[in-house]
Picture (cartoon, rainbow over the protein chains, first blue to last red):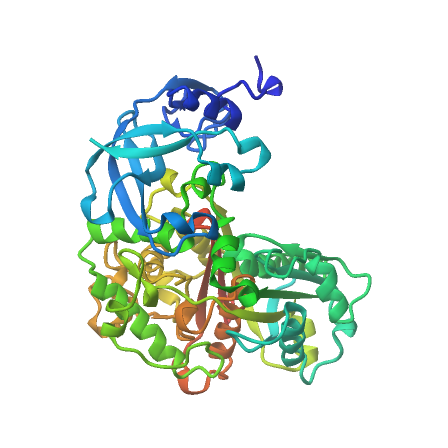
Length: 143
Length: 389
């Protein structure tokens, strides 16, 4: 299949990626030329420009690379604040941003975490675009 | 190749104003064309830096502002790149003059950020982040930069107090800038004791929300000589886009800024040590530290010393003065206008019009404007009154 045939079932598109994530599978793009991990997957490698990107399962485990807490949220997330957000370096080399299910004061750089996936809440569906309504939400749990 | 120069500049008041965007532009345009012929007799094209249509529910700002300037039937368009929109507009104008397409182009920027309160601005700015992962996780501009700051404090000897000192320095500069949104000095405890916004960043680490417009007239050197005002050469221009998601970038080596600055230096035939003043994108205090390293002013890990006088900085630092205007932090940061306010400050510094805040002997300036988080998009310009090498 060439990229001209890309459709929403392909994990290199957002619907394809989130469909797999809803089933608990974190998929990454892996560049066939330079090995860069792309989260979410996409047809072209940002690191080297190659279009030889394969899709491979990624470990949900990783470590906190950097983190903060949002005290001044966008209006849609006002009820959640303050909430902790981090960039996590995953065991297979990709990095992904997400919320952390822990208080800011209980988090440090290097802490081990694991990605969990849940269905969007009614409030999250409310602010979602039509095509996002069923996309799952990922959260990092301390482990 | 014609040499582009800045022939005139103007700005509106900055901060919380009663004027809608188009009227802010009218004020900036009037200052820029004070003593000059009508814009219609000079300007051949218009670029408008503008972050978001949500503030005033208005796109087509190229068309609108060309009309408000009396410019019918010229090419005019809005340029979008979040907070880098202003410098992108300037860059387009510079390229049009350089390649001979136009003799005079108006680069302007406008933002009416206070129209929907802090919540409205927070929401509008969050659109600059990756929708699929980042926005859905609830990140904000301060929290994105806090992720960089946390990492910077982890990797270097810099402390929260050092970042606070950057804000103190920029407020002290703004106190001598009659254009500044916050022309007042503050002390370091005011920063350290201010409300947490996204730790380690606090309220006084963050540039304010505010309204503003700026207008910069870019012309050929020949035309500027006919207009008979002071002129500043735009000797170099560089731009770079990097990943939209901050997680996928190096968070302390701001590569896009390095590339944009080095491209501009190379075109201008200068290096970092030749730069006398710099207006860098201190949307958050940590930005000034990171950018000072990226553009070659400071050794790796020592950019946070930008607040110190040159003689007190570590070996390897240049003598550059950073953000004499007060920077985004205290001069103000009306998003789409910011890149042009940076150009305005450099123009005034290099033409002897900077009053009490003048940096003695300043000849060459670097402008560094970012959009999105850090180097999602970066634009660098070198402005100089020195002879071409």
